[in-house]
Image 1 (cartoon, rainbow, N blue to C red):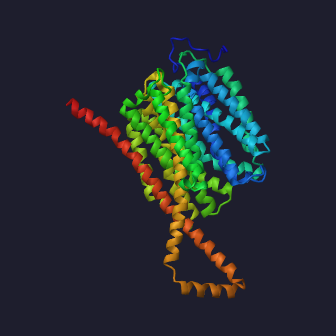
Image 2: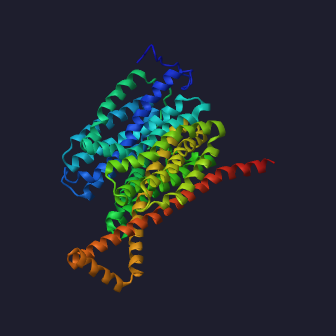
Length: 520
């Protein structure tokens, strides 16, 4: 609607040709929505173990609260480009905020597992709409020379919010109750919708495009099967489970049929000509492996480390995590400014060096014996590296895509974030269990059985307990220590994936050098 303070630009105006005041207001409205949506992901992760009683289910049941959200968000991404082109970013963004907020209210009111899962599905679709549109709008509000800063600001939501989640979730559950995690989104959503209707500018560019329902259905089936397989693999025993085998089969067949459908469609769901640009392709692979396969493992492992190895309460673990989250927030806009000054490629290379140094030489040192202050300090460079990562990679990808394909480029980025992050989380859980068992077996192998028996007999007499109890205590100690030492191996394997992703960072410069030599 017209507004004297924030007039709607005419069609000849570029989206970024607005006043500084308008840019600040638009950015705040959009960023608060993105921050709220992605913060909710890790906030809910914290409370899920506490929902078995209120929802009358077990841990396997409440796991669907996370899985349903993740699957719905991934499928929702696939329709974002069509919706934005048809209705405009503003309408889709506000619709996403409204869906997310209403679904949050029903999540908070839920008393059964079934109702909260349905609400989480709606919430997941809302999150997909919010993330893609907010990304598009933030990028459009800043002129070309400030695109890095725009993505640095946006990185506050994508990188800082997930790390802040455990702190917020721990605080709300400790001082209020688990329902507040959902209810807190409702007033924020209402304010955003009202502010968005009043202040956000109307979209001026629309495009008539047909929707490839066949390709969408096939890709959705493949994606849903893959994500469910990855989220339930550890629980069901991976490929010893028939269910996991069936899900993998459906995923593979679904992706194959999707590719065949795209090849024979007049209007494809995804324009793969984007991948002809080497910088775009390398940027997607950097995002897929470094963020998804590697960084998401640390996102999963660090809260587990603080809660289960350092044995901190949820709130204290959240505060410890906030230490590196703070540096993500500080360095995200700094990386954006650096991208504008020295270029996205050089900035992402610096980020990769910091991240690799942290993942290979600092994080593997975390164990039970690490003093708390030292543990926090060791994670700070991780926050720096992650804060510097998102903005330059995003700028690189979006600048490599044609202007009319920016929505699709963002959809692909978020899609590989979901899929790569699901692989990363699955790898972390699988590796943690594997290395815990491996370390336990090695501890048993090198033990002097006679000495252990003598030690346990003396401990039994000294403590005045039964033989069975002292043996159980000792076994639990061995399990704990094998879990503790398993973190080293798991952290190192996460670092290897980061190293693989860094090869695509090198290719950014290799392709450039090759082109220069050819011209000479």
